[in-house]
Image (cartoon, rainbow, N blue to C red; front, side):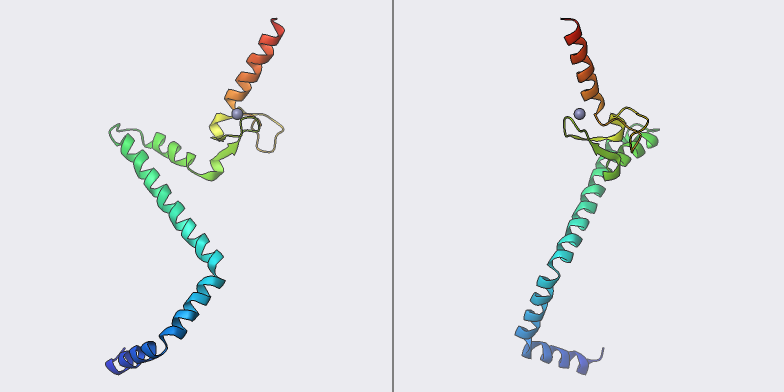
Length: 127
Ligand SMILES: [Zn+2]
Protein backbone atom coordinates (compact mmCIF):
# COMPACT_ATOMS: atom_id res chain seq x y z
CA UNK A 1 0.00 0.00 0.00
CA UNK A 2 1.51 3.35 -1.02
CA UNK A 3 1.38 6.58 0.93
CA UNK A 4 -1.42 8.13 -1.10
CA UNK A 5 -3.57 5.09 -0.64
CA UNK A 6 -2.98 5.13 3.11
CA UNK A 7 -3.91 8.80 3.33
CA UNK A 8 -7.03 8.28 1.29
CA UNK A 9 -8.01 5.42 3.54
CA UNK A 10 -7.37 7.46 6.68
CA UNK A 11 -9.42 10.32 5.26
CA UNK A 12 -12.21 7.97 4.31
CA UNK A 13 -12.17 6.47 7.75
CA UNK A 14 -12.25 9.79 9.65
CA UNK A 15 -15.05 11.08 7.39
CA UNK A 16 -17.14 7.93 7.76
CA UNK A 17 -16.22 6.97 11.30
CA UNK A 18 -19.78 6.75 12.55
CA UNK A 19 -21.01 4.81 9.52
CA UNK A 20 -18.17 2.33 9.83
CA UNK A 21 -18.71 1.94 13.57
CA UNK A 22 -22.41 1.37 13.01
CA UNK A 23 -21.67 -1.17 10.30
CA UNK A 24 -19.27 -3.05 12.58
CA UNK A 25 -21.81 -2.97 15.38
CA UNK A 26 -24.52 -4.29 13.05
CA UNK A 27 -22.24 -7.04 11.88
CA UNK A 28 -21.43 -7.95 15.50
CA UNK A 29 -25.11 -8.01 16.37
CA UNK A 30 -26.14 -10.16 13.45
CA UNK A 31 -23.26 -12.55 14.12
CA UNK A 32 -23.53 -12.51 17.90
CA UNK A 33 -24.17 -16.23 18.04
CA UNK A 34 -21.20 -17.07 15.83
CA UNK A 35 -18.94 -14.73 17.78
CA UNK A 36 -19.93 -16.14 21.15
CA UNK A 37 -19.53 -19.71 19.85
CA UNK A 38 -16.10 -18.81 18.56
CA UNK A 39 -15.10 -17.18 21.84
CA UNK A 40 -16.42 -20.12 23.81
CA UNK A 41 -14.46 -22.56 21.68
CA UNK A 42 -11.30 -20.52 22.04
CA UNK A 43 -11.78 -20.33 25.80
CA UNK A 44 -12.51 -24.07 26.03
CA UNK A 45 -9.41 -24.81 24.01
CA UNK A 46 -7.27 -22.57 26.22
CA UNK A 47 -8.72 -24.16 29.34
CA UNK A 48 -7.98 -27.58 27.94
CA UNK A 49 -4.43 -26.68 27.04
CA UNK A 50 -3.88 -25.30 30.53
CA UNK A 51 -5.31 -28.48 32.08
CA UNK A 52 -3.10 -30.62 29.83
CA UNK A 53 -0.08 -28.59 30.86
CA UNK A 54 -1.00 -28.97 34.51
CA UNK A 55 -1.31 -32.74 34.19
CA UNK A 56 1.96 -32.99 32.27
CA UNK A 57 3.69 -30.89 34.92
CA UNK A 58 2.38 -33.01 37.75
CA UNK A 59 3.76 -36.13 36.08
CA UNK A 60 6.96 -34.77 34.64
CA UNK A 61 8.92 -35.83 37.71
CA UNK A 62 7.94 -39.47 37.24
CA UNK A 63 9.81 -40.45 34.14
CA UNK A 64 7.97 -43.27 32.38
CA UNK A 65 4.47 -42.02 32.89
CA UNK A 66 3.76 -40.88 29.35
CA UNK A 67 0.99 -43.49 29.05
CA UNK A 68 -0.66 -42.39 32.26
CA UNK A 69 -0.49 -38.80 31.06
CA UNK A 70 -2.18 -39.78 27.80
CA UNK A 71 -4.86 -41.63 29.73
CA UNK A 72 -5.56 -38.64 31.95
CA UNK A 73 -5.58 -36.32 28.96
CA UNK A 74 -8.06 -38.55 27.21
CA UNK A 75 -10.32 -38.14 30.22
CA UNK A 76 -10.54 -34.44 29.42
CA UNK A 77 -12.40 -35.24 26.23
CA UNK A 78 -16.13 -34.73 26.51
CA UNK A 79 -16.66 -37.98 24.62
CA UNK A 80 -14.93 -39.92 27.34
CA UNK A 81 -17.52 -38.95 29.92
CA UNK A 82 -21.05 -40.05 30.53
CA UNK A 83 -23.66 -39.14 33.05
CA UNK A 84 -24.64 -41.75 35.60
CA UNK A 85 -28.40 -42.20 35.50
CA UNK A 86 -28.63 -42.40 39.27
CA UNK A 87 -26.21 -39.86 40.81
CA UNK A 88 -26.32 -37.64 37.67
CA UNK A 89 -22.57 -37.03 37.90
CA UNK A 90 -20.56 -36.95 34.69
CA UNK A 91 -17.85 -39.53 35.15
CA UNK A 92 -15.12 -40.92 32.91
CA UNK A 93 -16.08 -44.07 30.99
CA UNK A 94 -13.64 -46.00 33.15
CA UNK A 95 -15.99 -45.41 36.09
CA UNK A 96 -18.59 -47.72 34.47
CA UNK A 97 -18.68 -51.49 34.39
CA UNK A 98 -19.12 -53.16 31.03
CA UNK A 99 -22.52 -54.48 30.10
CA UNK A 100 -23.58 -56.27 26.97
CA UNK A 101 -26.66 -55.08 25.18
CA UNK A 102 -26.54 -51.40 26.11
CA UNK A 103 -25.93 -48.81 23.37
CA UNK A 104 -22.40 -48.06 24.55
CA UNK A 105 -21.63 -51.45 26.06
CA UNK A 106 -21.47 -49.95 29.53
CA UNK A 107 -23.73 -49.95 32.56
CA UNK A 108 -26.18 -47.07 32.99
CA UNK A 109 -25.05 -46.56 36.59
CA UNK A 110 -21.52 -45.74 37.65
CA UNK A 111 -19.50 -48.26 39.60
CA UNK A 112 -20.06 -46.64 42.97
CA UNK A 113 -23.83 -46.44 42.43
CA UNK A 114 -23.91 -50.10 41.44
CA UNK A 115 -21.89 -51.06 44.49
CA UNK A 116 -24.22 -48.97 46.65
CA UNK A 117 -27.33 -50.57 45.24
CA UNK A 118 -25.83 -54.07 45.58
CA UNK A 119 -25.00 -53.34 49.18
CA UNK A 120 -28.48 -51.97 49.83
CA UNK A 121 -30.04 -55.11 48.33
CA UNK A 122 -27.81 -57.31 50.44
CA UNK A 123 -28.65 -55.41 53.62
CA UNK A 124 -32.34 -55.70 52.84
CA UNK A 125 -32.04 -59.49 52.49
CA UNK A 126 -30.16 -59.79 55.77
CA UNK A 127 -32.85 -58.16 57.89
ZN1 LIG B 1 -23.61 -42.85 39.94
